[in-house]
Length: 294
Image (tube, rainbow, N blue to C red):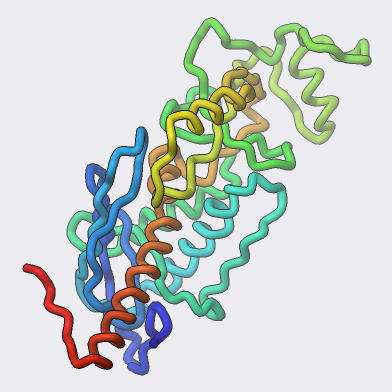
């Protein structure tokens, strides 16, 4: 039995590029490995409302690893430390990815339509880290945001209802023990003395969202989903933040849903690889060879 993925003894830096085809989604995900994988069967993920999504792993070509090493290193580190680590909603990074010392050499990447690694898009995602929102007009329904002054990593989406809009000069209507706090700007400048809040500027109206599910390998019962949603009161509450306190989230909404499927895909790939290896061992022992169906 060998490691997965198997390390190469070839010193030429030739790695192998694969595309992950997820039914009904853009085929943007891929990965590279140091040795070509044995052929693996397709498998299923369970999407929204337990919709079955078939996943195929397609071999593309051999690549020169040194040509993409820096971009892959940056992207994988960002993916594990800023996206997957967000599962725990912690203020401190728990995952620490080191491409040089990691024994798991199946490295995710993004692909273009014509079977090339999309280095430009991968680096653009990495450059989102702590990127500030500079003006209210930049807010988008497709984006995710974080309030950088909070210790947790709560993700927010914007609420486009203009009726809920507030300005930093509007009266602070919540409880406070200080008479000097009259407006939203007063409150946030008291909380963050080193931040200057523009007066009479529109604030962001946002609501918190729950992290996407991370296990797409099993169906979720309707009862469990209903209980989960009913208990998440925070997601239904609107919060107002001055623009000065918002950063872009680690990814946008579409990419978050895509990347959160990746751990389940990696788990299933590993399982299928070991199953195929066991079949090969059994076949060699009893002199029976597997016949693949066409």
